[in-house]
Image (cartoon, rainbow, N blue to C red; front, side):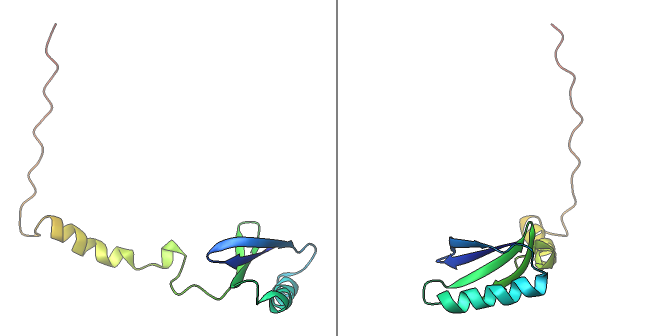
Length: 99
């Protein structure tokens, strides 16, 4: 596992935490950050591709599946083409001219 110490939205330092359980790594990360909180604004603890904890937590979810974007799609599409206008099919493709 790796603990990334953040400042200004960028990684400024890294600590490798080997051989710890998730709970142990989280506790160790909090302890390391409390020693360095004057140097860094926050931290992220990762186990390969899995984030275990972020401090402070982001204001908005970073998981795209949790974003309510799908609710706004109908409005966005509706603003491009009014819902009451019929969709006109495209004309058939013409064959290429014979040489």
